[in-house]
Figure 1 (cartoon, rainbow, N blue to C red):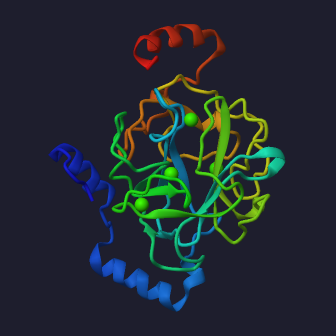
Figure 2: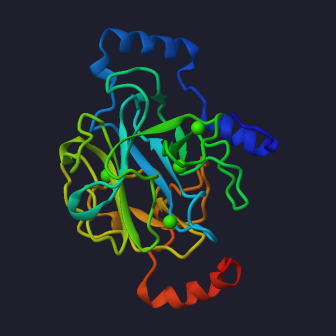
Length: 282
Ligand SMILES: [Ca+2]
Ligand SMILES: [Ca+2]
Ligand SMILES: [Ca+2]
Ligand SMILES: [Ca+2]
């Protein structure tokens, strides 16, 4: 999985891809899946959550955007046919991308505790982080970078574009894939997050169709992290999302709520911008 990375990074990624149940457990789960596929398909109550959103990339705003998903629950979740889409105009999703396969399939397990990184473009970066070894990438069929070593999420609806995470404000959601047409049925939502000046927030959970308070935007070069790690209150994005340094695939999000960075307050914007400005105007 990891090509040309340091031993330290490798150990992190081995941890990422650890199979807690071992081969025997995996075979058992797949066997169960084959017999009762709907029982193990991604369900709205599964605790599969976004844990990082890196939307405000230094320099050219494109390739190095990524999202991270984690299975914070105790059972395997299969992502076959699940969809990810970003906020759009008047409730209409922008690009809708899906994992290969169909809801109920057994090809793409996300194991308890496992994190996956989904890159906008999994290309070697002139920017950091290098996402060429991401677990997945969004690939627009007509005019996109396509790393042949990284599997693709498939455009299946919405605008005919790549995924694009707006710097000023946006939202993104994960849904089971039983509905792929706009607007995505709120009752199929597994998780969602909104940030900044988003005109039309996405649902943030199963039946939680309204997000009363998007998370404050973060300064360029930082990302949003769900803190403490994996906890989803489904109250508002502002409750769960904080500023952090991008750490794709690593469990860098504090488990102690006291260690979560405070949400960016309006009064601190000037100081934070001053801190980051010298290195970020690329
Ligand atoms: Ca962006
Ligand atoms: Ca792409
Ligand atoms: Ca690819
Ligand atoms: Ca949620």
